[in-house]
Length: 95
Image (cartoon, rainbow, N blue to C red; front, top):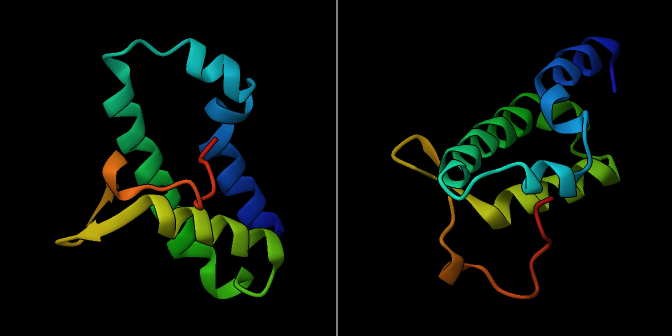
């Protein structure tokens, strides 16, 4: 990644990368989950939108892009988390 991108997104992702995925999930209450999913949707959308032109040919970004497209959708210019019934076993998991 370019240094400016690395710095910007390291700051945005800091609260997620400071702990393991298991620790992050364990510390959430049931009531927090919808709010946290919406925050993640916004973050995934921003990352995808801002970085796709510079990194679309890089394999790890292609994997990220697949996860983004499989788990989120844009409706009326708003990013939304897809409902469970729209997900299937062939999709990559968000973690």
